[in-house]
Image (cartoon, rainbow, N blue to C red; front, side, top):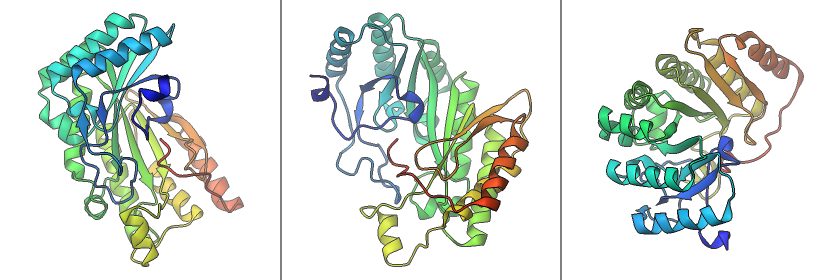
Length: 297
């Protein structure tokens, strides 16, 4: 059975909803972020190439046509390059119809790879890299124990772009909490990182406090005060206002995940005013309600 292949819980980016998921790692190589419980029950492990190939063979018998493939779990790019090349080559052999392989990455895994290694991975078909920036504010990144600085994120994202990858960067609105100064710093510094790196895609999620996370427990003790929906939408407005994107390097924005208070999508720079108009309308006319947790990626 297909459900016996995966080690649950299993997560993937929203845009990979129809992709074949190949679980090449279990868990996350960092797994210390205070807001996240996605891999709390897993110890990070890289599967053997033999096991991965067996699972690829299984899925080839199950699926008649596969257009896109996503390599899970967290930070699968941390796998050594020779193994990733072998995995991608085997996927191309078994699924010659596939158009794209995508993968989660961290600044650490990108920085560890040489430009030549990244180019080889791109050439063999890994075309899209997902990166969870969360915030461009080093103070926030330290508080949530992200494990990397904003500067390291910029190095990693730029390195991926130089190798020819499409990049999808995710940020979390509301991560600074209710403090207005912290929220504004989070928004402005996050906008700066996005401005400097100009990823292909920008995904905006909204913070959900989970009781079995460090941040959730901090909130229970009143050490972290959660921002409300209107305050989070205002934070997103500050981010969008401070993005001045070159028409030659557009950014596709999506804030249509189930965690979001407001469904936003468009492409900067051409849709900037339309997006801001939607945000202003929401700020002036409603009390938004969040739909669900951002951790259901």
